Length: 159
Image (cartoon, rainbow, N blue to C red; front, top):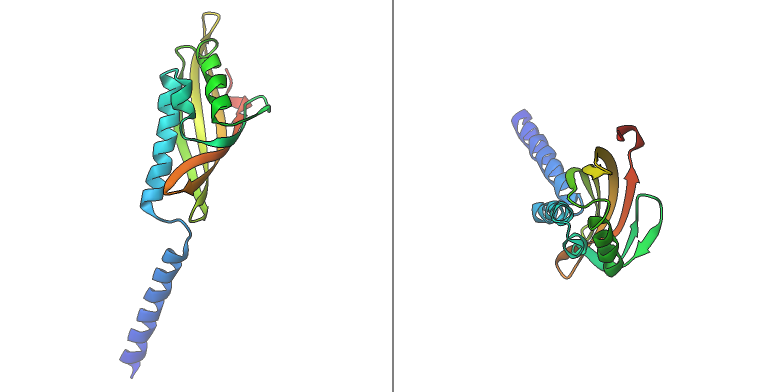
């Protein structure tokens, strides 16, 4: 009898642990991989100096808060605004992304935090900066896109 109770207890514990893992919303590896790819696309678009490529992972009506706190609306504005800085202050700059976290709020909504390390030249002087981004992503029609983006300078890392 003791063996049966021990075996049942073990089975119940295993089932509860398995159910807990499955209950986490959005825990699908393919969704995490898609979000990682979006971060890579942002980095690649930035480093290519290509506003359209940088903006491509954003929803058509995305909200974007730029580093100075101003808000822009929509993929087209994100594209043109970034192309303007890629052609001027951030021409030939390099931005390296480090995905810090992904949290699935629902199966089709996630929040990601990305730290960026920017290297650029200003008036012939090498400069660096660090920023932290909060991204809200939504999956619609099987595709993930950024619906909101908050860019915050990490002042202590400025040189």
